[in-house]
Image (tube, rainbow, N blue to C red; front, side, top):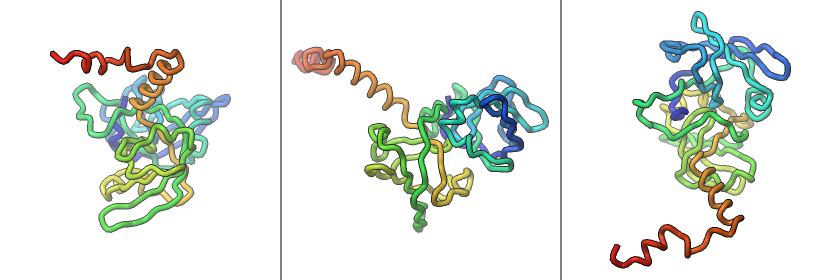
Length: 218
């Protein structure tokens, strides 16, 4: 589990195919202070397992589904990447609950520089529209961000200079493909609501709230 607060920007050192997967070597500094084999690391929002580590260079092995679903298919040597270690129980929850399980990719379709922030417009597949709400959370390339406005097939983000400076968002250009992970809480709520509706169990008579409404003494 991650928070979406990027610890540092690392760099891709090598990309080696194995079968339909890929071994990825990356370098960094801060995250290597206690990083070990079998630890989880978020690379541009994708949760990966460390398989080897030496001299501030670590290796992960991305499987076929990960490559197909994420921007890993477009990785290049020397490319900058967002890095975050898995959160500790004592960590402040500065962002939101991030699993590192990418749902889909989006595309930067507009960038506007304002006086105190930069406005990014991100296009995304409309089937994920239910997972976005104004002022809700979204994780882009591992960065926990707040949605400013949801449109039909895109959403707006107003990002402060500090976040841009300390992440790969500083590299974004129009047409950039980015990893998207939607809020896990919304996914669970949707699944449970659909279950009750599909099984005809959702009605006012069995609502927990209705039980309290029917008891004036409460």
